[in-house]
Length: 107
Image (cartoon, rainbow, N blue to C red; front, side, top):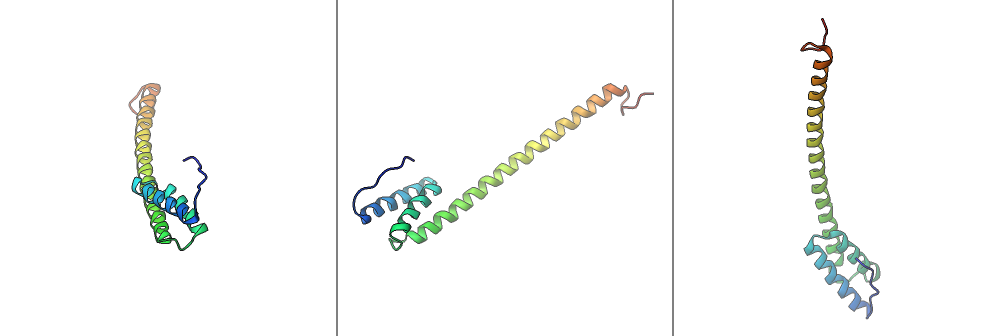
């Protein structure tokens, strides 16, 4: 998101950022919502329910990140298993050719 210089009174700026944070949360952009809410908290800490909304956005971001990490680890484990399977079969195939026998020992 491009940086924009906000104009208007502090209340108007906080209202803009609060609405922006709510929109970001509805879109699932918790990082953007957290950024907007932290700006409000920095300049007007008691504005509406900013503290509660910030806590909720941080919690949801952590949950979202954890679910994403779990999926990444699952995909990596599957890829590792497949790679190991194919590498093992390739090694068995190469040993069979090199040794001449079914167990790789030449007689």
